[in-house]
Length: 338
Ligand SMILES: Nc1ncnc2c1ncn2[C@@H]1O[C@H](COP(=O)(O)OP(=O)(O)OP(=O)(O)O)[C@@H](O)[C@H]1O
Ligand SMILES: [Mg+2]
Image 1 (tube, rainbow, N blue to C red):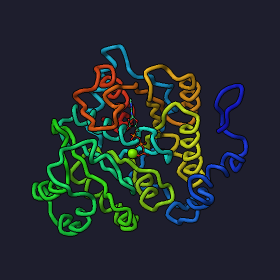
Image 2 (cartoon, rainbow, N blue to C red; image 1 turned 90 degrees about the vertical axis):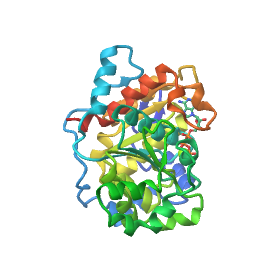
Image 3 (tube, helix red, strand yellow; image 1 turned 135 degrees about the horizontal axis):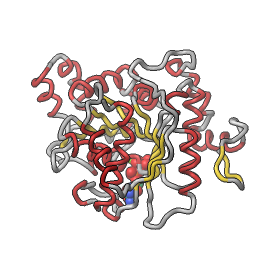
């Protein structure tokens, strides 16, 4: 993607100067090559079985908040619906500070507040994720590391016992509307999250939860990141209306397309999250750009409650923010609602 006089458009030359600069900045080598080096992202490989392409054409830009009450009713109806099985939403953009963690928590909080149960946010950051600190009670300090330690034992259980056992490793939102699986602070642990383990964790979470929101962190090179993206039912491209953040999001979409995940890119939802109260001059341009690349674009507002970066209390958000998130989360889950 490059900035032109006419607005944002795809770069004509995908291996151009910007790509090389970003590759070096983010990975120290060609990110494209790194993805293709991995046979799990072989472009010839079939898409993950759970991925169901949406046959509809991309939706128009859907701006939240919505004013009309019937929009709220539609959104609540989608969030209450049978989703046809557990759904994994992956929140991704390798750029730091683009509201991934906040978005993961707020999507889970919104879905959980309507569905009442069965919603989980997983902090899959490999380096000092903050989701566990910003959401969920600190009733214990257990993280993904403790869950992996006992994984086989927990996998062997079923029904209530499974829920009960898994619950020992989760934290709960203050109002009980969603659960949190915290990430591990020790960066050496990241190596343990190989594709096989990550798939087992997702499968386990999907046995007990209907909606699993994953904060994918920043490392597109890691097998963990790639496995979550490949396993996701819905990709949520999370960005703020800034050139560098949007450029990195666009670059990530290029990589995924080149790795054979074009349908996932087309079915992605782009979340434009506003970091300031005023409207960014880039907002409309970026919304139009991502509406051409992804299924839908939703805009969620700045909220002073979120700015401090501390504990995210869904109940303290302004009615306009809650309404925007209701709409945004419904757009993410709409393809699955029956
Ligand atoms: N809607 C919002 N309104 C105001 N401030 C916000 C909003 N969303 C997020 N923020 C602020 O932006 C900061 C960065 O957001 P967040 O931690 O979610 O980004 P991230 O993409 O997860 O970053 P990293 O990649 O470093 O983990 C938050 O700490 C918070 O202060
Ligand atoms: Mg984060």
